[in-house]
Length: 113
Image (cartoon, rainbow, N blue to C red; front, top):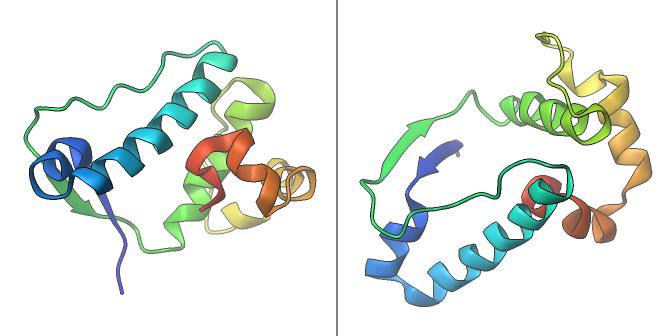
């Protein structure tokens, strides 16, 4: 099983699965609340856009994204480039200790995945 990143999921689901679109719209609303709470722009997923999908750097690539998200949360800045030990980053470990799975959803939107 691979991992892909998709742009335009709302547009796609509005055509093929309205209930699924509603679910993702709620997820993006949670994400937007978090982003604005740290003085970033809200996420806008356009309802009409060409859908794009690309394979990601496997599931290990999630460590890189989680590391970036944790640094943005705690410092408001991007970290220096990481390496294959991204999952061992002290800031990322701090996230895991500060938020258990039940709290992570409200704090980071979809970051808990």
